[in-house]
Image (cartoon, rainbow, N blue to C red):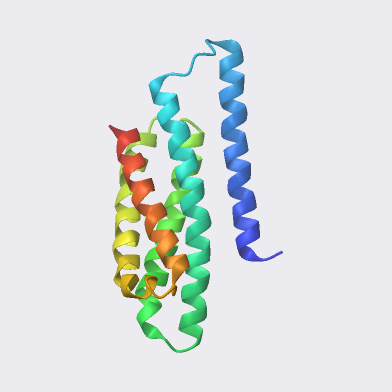
Length: 152
């Protein structure tokens, strides 16, 4: 099993825990979804998408760095940091922590930094190059937006 499969599998486990907690709450309380829980659901999905695309982007950067292309060092580092923050945010939001909103705001900053770094490769996207970086950038933009929406 490779590292990406292991990490994505563990994040899927966190998402499953979130779904179970939500179901248990719904069974004991009103099954009606509140605007806050709908926002949390959207955020969890965005975080999972961001984590998945970031793993691919980071792998691509690693391969390019291995070929001696040092210009991808910043992208690798920023993506790695954002990935850690998204994983943490997913866990904190899934646990319905009282610090979830503050964590989401911080996560938004990491996602913005990652999207900004990935956008430096935009000229390659038109040539069907660095598409994992493009997908990461797009996921980060969406995740940043939903993190801010959740924290509001």
